[in-house]
Amino acid sequence: MKRRSGLMLALCVVMLMGLGGSAKMLAQSATGKTHRVVFAVTSDEEQDWHITMGNIRNLIEGLKPDPVEVEVVAYAGGIALVKNDSSAAADIAKLQEKGVKFVACQNAMRARHLELKDLLPGVTPVPAGIVEVVTKQEQGWIYIKGGR
Image 1 (cartoon, rainbow, N blue to C red):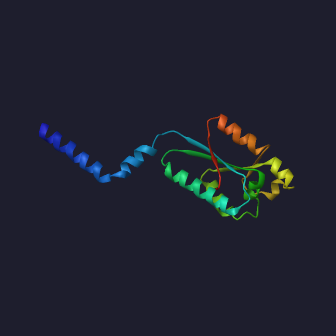
Image 2: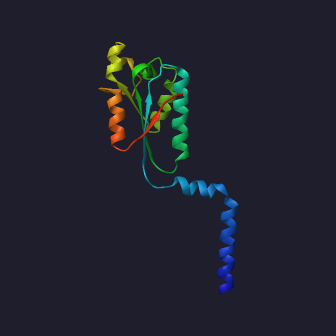
Image 3: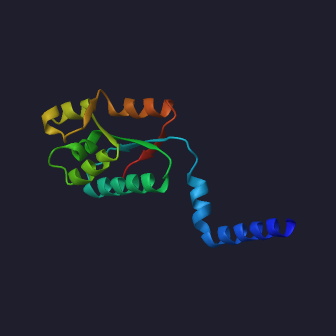
């Protein structure tokens, strides 16, 4: 009986070693907690938007199977990210399907004479982008500056 238990243990160890880094990576990311991350996009440069969208996709994928809440706050020049004519519109729609929330700063909207109808579907306004970012951080959200 002892010998059989020893063989089973050895077999389990060999199987785990065969999984290599995969098992280790899975164990590291599967914390069971919800990760909350707020991205601030203040740049009107498309390259910065595409970098941010890629970072969000990598974040969601890398933290699987844990739940991830992501909010993108577009303010200052970054308000162009969430306009109807944004080059990132398709990326934004795909991320929204995954639960990523996009919000637009009303101060930036006023400064650029934008109305709700000028924003992509699903984008919601907040009174001030910077206040939204600070509030999220005070609630324990992790802050990431979008772009370069």
